[in-house]
Figure 1 (spheres, helix red, strand yellow):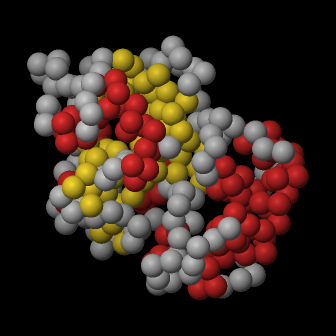
Figure 2 (spheres, helix red, strand yellow):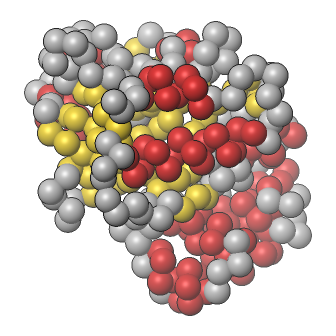
Figure 3 (cartoon, one colour):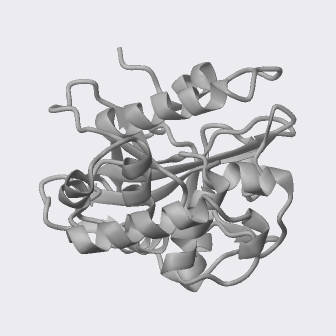
Length: 280
């Protein structure tokens, strides 16, 4: 019998007191599982995840970019992004699978998904994913949706959950999983050692780098840092070679600059430089 997702998350998250370096391997393992074996049912319709980001903060792994909402401490539940007690609206909507525990919030942000059998339609971005979920479940608001079920990521015994995940190891073929820095992180709110250290961590995982529009430069510079040629990066990301060269050139410029120079709004070129500056 296939394990429930909540049980797998419980088993695979490093226990308190683990070395900071163990988290990257655990996140990679969970991403491989979710991107290749998970089926997310939305209003009864099966989807697969195409892009995820991991956030988790604790004394062992002090990631300052984690929201820190108390709901992120309830491992195995859905967390719709909130500001205080209000669900975020507009382009700030987002949905996590909570992976935290007592005093250690964390979440897997759903950045992309695809309806099975409809390979031409990729939902690219957290807000679009939430809008799609609301549309398929027939709810006008997040508050309305969350009032109808327990928020468990597992199927409910009644079979009535509007949103749940099952693990299906029979799915094939396995897709290559790419890793990069997370999208949208900046140093505008400070240049502490922890913010610099975690900004470029490869905690974003995706299977469709050539089909996304958001955060493509992050994948390009990550592939460059892993030793891929510019031609290969262009092929994998669906970018032109000239665009990849520009990303790479700016990334290398950034490797010679201090992260504190980027504590402001940034252009695309400066974002590449920031990733280079934080990668040293």
